Length: 134
Image (cartoon, rainbow, N blue to C red; front, side, top):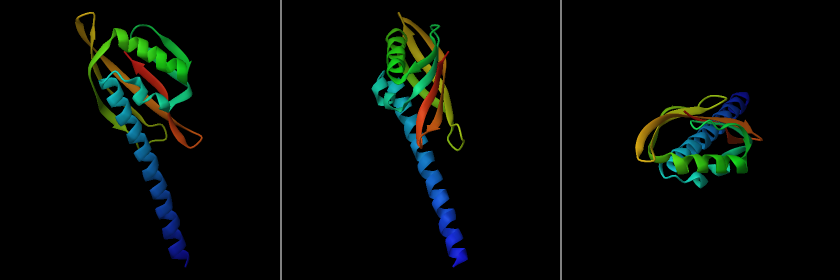
């Protein structure tokens, strides 16, 4: 009986961790898709109440979820995404993160930027705590 209880509890912990990793992967997929298609709404529901945003254009600071949406939307209206791909993804951490390369068009001039995103577990839900685009 004790062995069964231990096995059940151990499986339950593993299952819970798998769900959390799947939630993290889902956020990263939505983030990648959103940047690729200039569709912030695909990942904006994952913003924390206060997220740190640091952008290539000099905007940097802590923003509410609503402000974060508009700060990134305004940035992408100038640095129009051509493509975005996450190339480094770490999901099995207490603070999951990912990074990738954004290719953009700024007034007819093509450029690239390194993008970094990190997540934080807040009230048992993964939220975007930081986005850096430099």
